[in-house]
Image 1: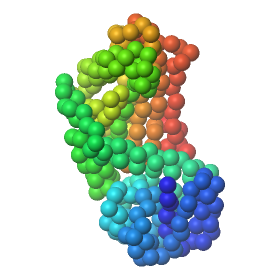
Image 2 (image 1 turned 60 degrees about the vertical axis):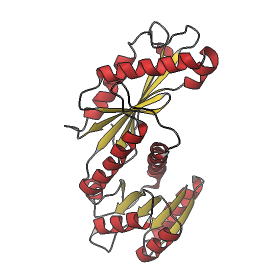
Image 3 (image 1 turned 90 degrees about the vertical axis):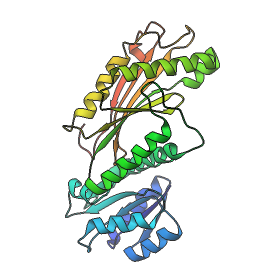
Image 4 (image 1 turned 90 degrees about the horizontal axis):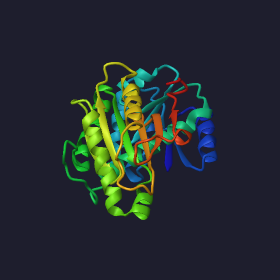
Length: 293
């Protein structure tokens, strides 16, 4: 993954460049914003760290960068005079305060990769899943996802995506057969439709994966509470598998838009009776810019 650093501050650029190189990346530095825009038109780079100074209109800087690239760009704004909220209002994906702490730069790259991979996956038209039983198709969901990115850019509107997947789907196909794997996925979708809120949109995003879009949360912790609720409920479901041979490995992951941050991750294992295996069940949480979730 290529990274572009747009900053006139040589100390910052050298520090970031060294950090990215230590992560195995190939960073490019452009002190001039105009030169950076020219480069982006010729060689699209989708992870960009930029200090908007001395331009006072930060939103103009972000929109100029986005227009220069045909695909969606992940933009991290850097400044000693801004806060995270200012960055979001300007249309940035994330914010790195100055003087920078290079120890957490790798997390920004992971978030950018996560969001970029999801954008490519949802936009891949070679595989789709039909709308059925309250679950919409991946292609329809992609349009809502792109709208969520645009609303984040224009209005700093937050959206959360809750992914529920059968992680060992391929193993189930191999051990129990394709029909058994498809049965488990279809049964999972029925449970998800049943326990979701009416306002939550659910889509099938893979043969083994479903995604709920949680829009306009009433308070900051609401998406985290939803992830926990789904994790607890899924640990109690029964008859998700038609075979006694292979246990079902489920995961519940909560991802923020537009940061791409993974805020919560539940893993649980079910057998045919729906009994959770405690030794294999765990909850992991991510952090938000060094702030505990």
